[in-house]
Image (tube, rainbow, N blue to C red):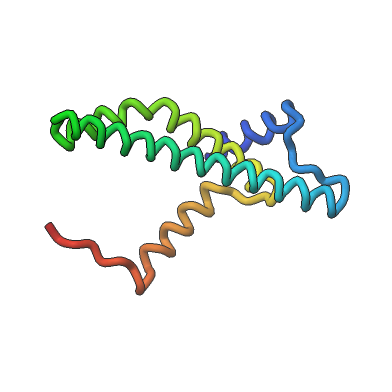
Length: 126
């Protein structure tokens, strides 16, 4: 992740897509605009999932086995889904770089915190 963050820092500079830091209002506007763009990309992930579920249902309605239908549908969205994940990651790294947050350190720290939670959901044993 550290390499990814460094790559994206240079990429955003090269593309002139950094968070605007001219003054507070421009920074605030830039942060909100980038947040809006991030949420748009997250919604595009939802659209890909929707497409997979619709394709699965169509194939099931044609008589295909449920699991086989879903596997075909998953494969059909894989490339586009990867692009949407990449778009989300680009915005997340932009925010992290602006706020000087090491995503990798934050990620592992958060996962340890989650492990220790008392109010975790209890999965059904199979």
